[in-house]
Length: 167
Image (cartoon, rainbow, N blue to C red; front, side, top):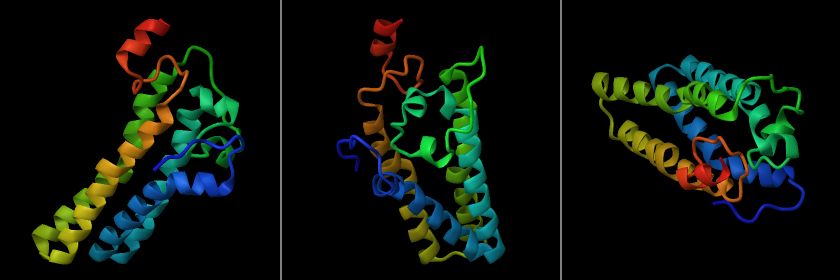
């Protein structure tokens, strides 16, 4: 999905880079809405809150944040209000941040499984399948391109060979 990064990030570029994540959240909201519509609203609020938490907890420790080159636009969206604290590393912050943001991936699975058990529907099964393809295959694959050329030495996603050379 990712194309070469423009010299200056635009709103359109950031939107395009976040399309799969937005689609995943919409599909998750639809799944929750099938169970009970207020849950869709709660889920979307959780999705926004976990992404803001990620911007606060992880982004200040990423090299792209300080350089203003974050493909997801988190540096731009947060206005760079979040500052790194001493004695913390990107690797350490990334683990908890990923667990928290992971709620957006796993809560819809619980809702879909509940729906499939309580009131089976092929429609729900199809939505669950699409959600899984987007959230667990397309989104991770597209985000790998953001790692190309990254200089964040202690990133857990960085290949071990590169970590050894940098260290």
